Length: 154
Image 1 (cartoon, helix red, strand yellow):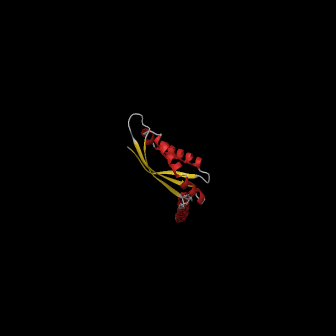
Image 2 (cartoon, rainbow, N blue to C red):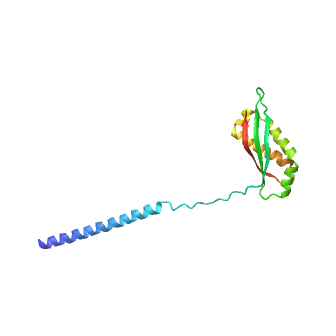
Image 3 (cartoon, helix red, strand yellow):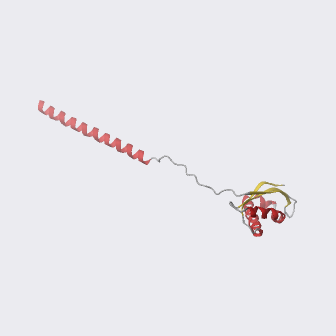
């Protein structure tokens, strides 16, 4: 019986060792899979935005709106952004054509109703309209954007 006990004890030790090795390999594999699936540290990608062009402030405009029933007016400050890298000649041209540009702004603003201008999409369309109309009269360059720094309807 002593030989059977030694044989049984040896088998038990081998079986325990195999189970221990399999458990360790399984634990290591699980740790490796979990660590490889976690996202690495995210690097912040800095996307260069286009440079801001020269700014030209047209000033404040107060215009009557084209409302058919009630009288409303709009008070707005309009700022023009010239193309980045535009020549000094464009800034000079804008300065020379200031009465013409202001007339375009007044005509465009006054042709809208208060209901139209309350919609943000229509305001963006108005900016685009102003940009296109002003660009049509400029010879030495183009506007990049039109901004409203104040915009109040009453």
